[in-house]
Image (cartoon, rainbow, N blue to C red; front, side):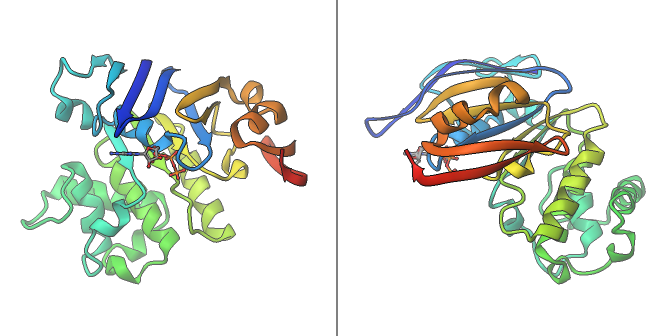
Length: 259
Ligand SMILES: Nc1ncnc2c1ncn2[C@@H]1O[C@H](COP(=O)(O)OP(=O)(O)OP(=O)(O)O)[C@@H](O)[C@H]1O
């Protein structure tokens, strides 16, 4: 599904990625963790084909980047980046924002085809947003807007969804609702790659985790093997303990915080 081999990125005399290897299999759902600036978004953008490495190879869904038309590969990838939400017009009706996902349009200027309109409504019904379909996007809460963008992403029937800190800024209720919407999607035939700074967002749907530090992957594999206090301490440089409750990891920072 995703095969990254020895990726490096050098910008302005700085090594931003230093030999990143990552192997994501079909149906696996990965979380990528690490300190600010360690290179997480850079890796996501390389997988989505928006950025290219200085050296190394990127294979996504059986395509070696550099030898294929990346726009074709991107049609199979739903990328929910940190600034996506700002691209939409607040007075457009919710259903139109979802419908635009079928062709990656930010706005629909022509009448949407009936089947696209129907599918948009079905995606909204699925998340319980049917009654809000005609409301302007701007009248929704932040959490609701994010769920609408998730529904929009599903319009293209992606095989891979990339989510960069989708729960940032959400309150507890909205965060849990968003994670529940993700859980429902996890049953479809797709893989997820999810970046977060909040360990407790690693709900049971996630199968694997990768930890990054200073442009390198310090650990990658099944989440129970990588989300250990020692490896997390190595990635975050903070002394901590970790507990699993309801199949979710919860962190306690030890006194003295950084080591
Ligand atoms: N085009 C660029 N030119 C120069 N430096 C860049 C460029 N893009 C990213 N960087 C730098 O690369 C490093 C990694 O950035 P990246 O956004 O991937 O980090 P991140 O792990 O996602 O961080 P955060 O958790 O804060 O979002 C940062 O120090 C950033 O300033």
